[in-house]
Length: 332
Image (tube, rainbow, N blue to C red; front, side, top):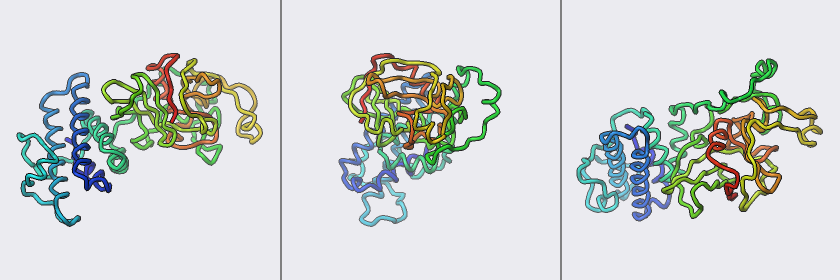
């Protein structure tokens, strides 16, 4: 069982939280997405597990509303039942008694972790930042799906395991393999489903350069969200593009600028671990922009000097399998 109270409490520190209608919308989105995603899991989530998660969320909502109804902040949370005004805003099921703060430690089962990701997306950036700071270390590492598909690396490449930077932005030298995923990456930049409302059709890719996110639109106001790194080559990229071509383990060639700065040697580097384009590439129809993997997954969530839109190799393999040539890409 997840303790939803600290997540909601962090979100309610926003100035908008004094507006009862704003809070009601947050609670309703959280409930809807929690139930929707639990029902969508395979194998199906047991009814008692869904009821337990809903009860925990409603208990947290009632506690938040009790505290919000007090004229002064910072007081000790009251344990008495909330008044009618609180019921009007929180609108929890009558069958769920107020249990106060949850006693169960924050243990993340696969169901609870999934539920928290959806809830945090619904309540906004405040909840997500709290979750990133307090719970991302408890989440399971992303499965390395790219390793089994990678070509056999030469012995020299395997021996070159230390991670060292060639630029101040944290990029690794061509030929150095930083791995398929970085388990130290903040939770918010790991692949996850999230609430996302848009008029774009299902299957569209939306790139949010400012927030360093890539969204793949799914049905029912849900998107798969991936953390990205953004290179200088694509800082001016905007508008509508389409995926023109796809390739697995593409070769890479150093740019003249990299050669001049002695950051790479001239010539072509064959596809494989350590290649700066990573495990997959999806070229856009403008002939110069792309989505690709990387040999430096720790740069996801940051701006870097070289390249375009990069994902960790685990994520780019996942995205590659979900999109086709012609997929629309909206860049914000």
